[in-house]
Length: 162
Image 1 (tube, helix red, strand yellow):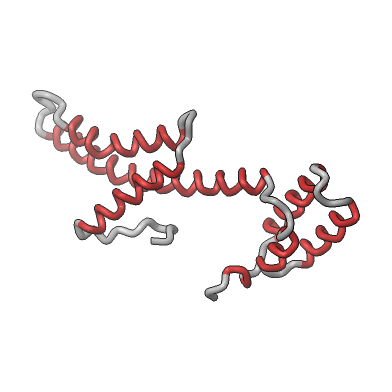
Image 2 (cartoon, helix red, strand yellow):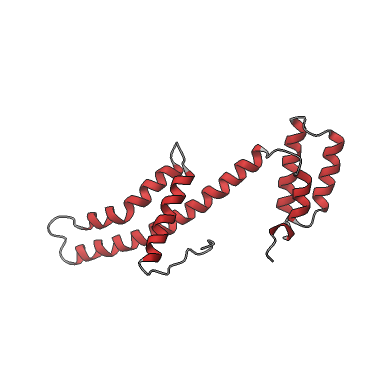
């Protein structure tokens, strides 16, 4: 189905709209009678278009913005975990080789650890730190993904749209 507005909605989608409608009623944007009418419509809605019609004349609520932000952060967090898994695997192999060869001399796997995990650590700080910058983190991860594709790696992130 190419039209996302015709997708069927779940109970959680209906409940989210009801919460948004209550927020708008508290703010004075809709009356209590209109709130009851729209809540009834929300519970009868079967498609995304039905829900969108009930909120068409209302501004975006703070709850929906917060929910969208949480979802986006969660997606970026999962992508970072996937990227760090590869770096940790390579680093573990290098440390194993260093130990198997007698663990003498300098700890040369530190160079591999730094090169593979430094970008992920930097992006993790920007994603989870005090001044979260989702756009920058997404742009960096997308650039790394495109570089891997250009080098011939056809790895696809499971569950993501690429």
